[in-house]
Length: 57
Image (spheres, rainbow, N blue to C red):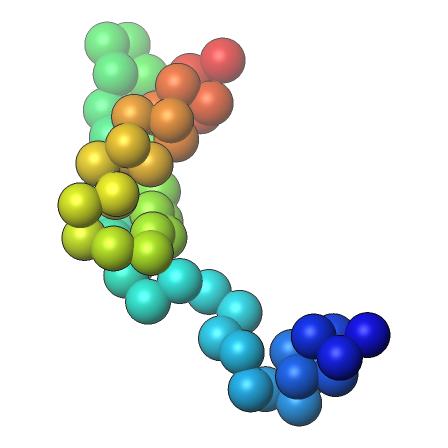
C-alpha cells in the first residue's frame, strides 16, 4: 500500500518521460495517429513496432 499512497499523492509520474506522436499509414487505410510512451529514447522504436502491429489487427 505504500506505493499506492505515493502514486495517489503524485510522487510517482503516471506516464513515462518520453512521448512521441507519429502518424502511421498503411496501404488502403487512412492514417492513424499514435502516441508512443517509453522510458528512454532508445526503447521507443520497439514500442512503435508493437503499436503498429496491435493497430493493424
